Length: 192
Image (cartoon, rainbow, N blue to C red):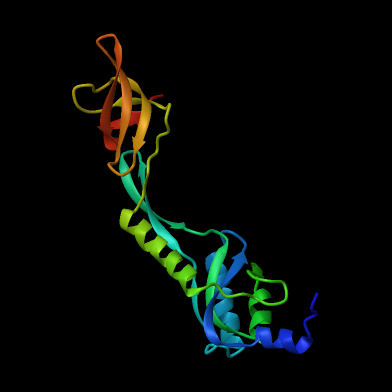
């Protein structure tokens, strides 16, 4: 097994190109980590070394009591991406920032993510925002009451969810038989 000399390790940590690094952080503290990093970078005069920060968020549409609401959702909770050069000083500043657990990579030096990996993450954000996935407030098996239409007041059981169409399939009793009916989410409510 070949041993790595200190000079080789030093050379590995010295990277003058800006690359994306992935930081594992305490989940829910991503924006606080970015604020802390920006402050530390400014105090250490490292603005030319650490140039960008990113934690991917997507917009999620939720139905609550018949009202659509938009909310940010972290795509990778517990991770922040930093575009930076890398050397011992930068590595020290980043990994000793409050709420940062580790810089993802080998133990002896951080490993940047590839441009292809970063571009894939950005594409995921774009695709999810374009779809703005709808999270329905119902689950299969829930008992709901239809509020509108010919079957208003009828109770049924949720059999299928279709967030793309903002609808659900409810199994209701009609003429003594269970019949599936597709309804808009706004036209039902959970039964008490």
